Structure formats: C-alpha cells, structure tokens
Length: 65
Ligand SMILES: [Zn+2]
Image (cartoon, rainbow, N blue to C red):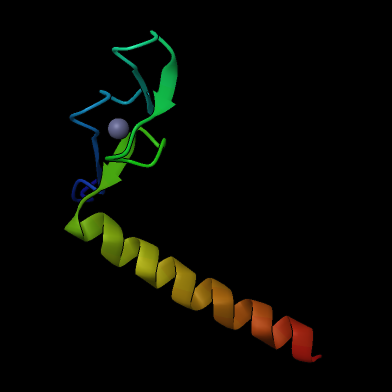
C-alpha cells in the first residue's frame, strides 16, 4: 500500500530466472537477474541497502554479547 515499485520482472527471462539455450535447449541461469527473475528498481535498492545496514548491525550486537 503506497509503496513504490521495488522490483520489476526481468525483461530477459520474464521472471523465470533461467533462459533456454539456443544450442542445446538446456536451461541456463539468466545473466540479467542472476537467476532471481526479478530486478530491483532504484527504490528497491534503497530498501535492500536499508535492510542490509540494519540487519548487519543487529548481528554484530548479538555476537558481541
Ligand atoms: Zn532474468
């Protein structure tokens, strides 16, 4: 609700995370999204940075005790 778009479906694999190789018909990891299928937008990256920053701080505090 009211959140900006945090991610967009990968334009290359359309959210599948894998691509069918033309040579052998095998499934290979999509290089655009690294197999995730979704690519974070600028707003999504900010949120990821925010979460990582605070999650790391929490871990450090716990290990110090
Ligand atoms: Zn992809």
